[in-house]
Length: 366
Image (cartoon, rainbow, N blue to C red; front, side):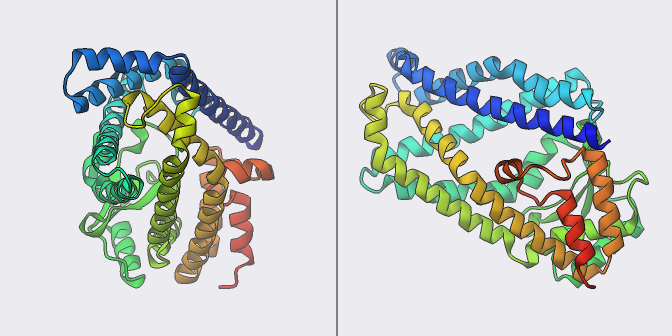
C-alpha cells in the first residue's frame, strides 16, 4: 500500500508541474503571438460596450483554455483517480460537475476582472490599492457564501443522522467555545472515495461538514471527534483570520508589483495600455509566477498552523490513540504520501506529512 501511495503521489506531483508549465506557456504564447490583441480588436469592432467586450473575451479565452487543457484535466481528475480506486464516479457525472465548475469559475473571474478594469479606468493613481481591497472583500464574502451557495452545487446536504455523533460534536463545540449552525453530512462519495471533514462558513453560515466517506462504520466516534477538534482548533487559534491577513498582504503586494512594473511587461508583449483587455493574460502571468514564488512560504505558514491545531486538538480531547489511528486510516484511504522528499514537502505540502503528525502526537504528553 505504501508503494501504491508513492506511485499515486509521484504522478500527482508530475501532473501538477506539467499543468503549471503548460498554462504558463499558453499564457505567454497568447499575447506573444498577437492572438490576444487580435481577439480584443475583433470584439471591440463588433461590440460597443467595453465591459461587454470583457465578458465575451473572457468567455472565449476561458473556453479555449478549457478545451486545450481537457485531456490533461480528464486524466488528472478522472482517469488517475479511477486507476488507483479512489473514485467510482461515472463519466457523465464528472462532465456535469466540470460544467458547473466551468460556469462558477467563469463568474468569479468575470466579477474580479470587471472590477479590475472599472477601478483601473476611474482611479488612475491608486487603482492597485482599491483593487486589492475589493479582491480581499470579495474573498471574505465568498468564504461566507461557500456553504450555502457553492458546496450545494456539487454535493447534497443533509443533517447528520447519527444523533450520538451529532451530540458529541455539539458538546465538543461548546467545550471549545465554537458557535456552529449544525452538523451536516454530504454525499462526498459521488465524486471520490477519499475521506474529508471541514468546518466552513462565516458567522451564521458556520457549520460542520462530514463526508459520508468518513462515516459508514469506517471511523470511530473518537476518531471523528478528534478530527473536528482539530478543525475547531483552527478557529480558536484564529488561523482563518491570520490566513486572511497573509493572503491580503499577498494581494496588495502583487497588485503593487503590477502597478510598478507593468509598463515593462506590456512593452515586452507589444502592448501599450494596461486598460486594454488584451493585457489580461499578462495579469494572469503575474499571479501565477507570484504564486510559484510565494507558495513555499504560504505552505510553511499553513504547516505551522496545522501542527498547532493538532496539538490543541490533542490537549482538548485527550484522544491521542484515536488521533494516531485516524491518521493511519486517512493515509490509507487517501493514498497519502506519508514521508515526502523535503523538496516535495517544501513546494507541495500545506499540511505536515502524516508520519510527522503521528510522531508529534505520540511525543505529546496528555
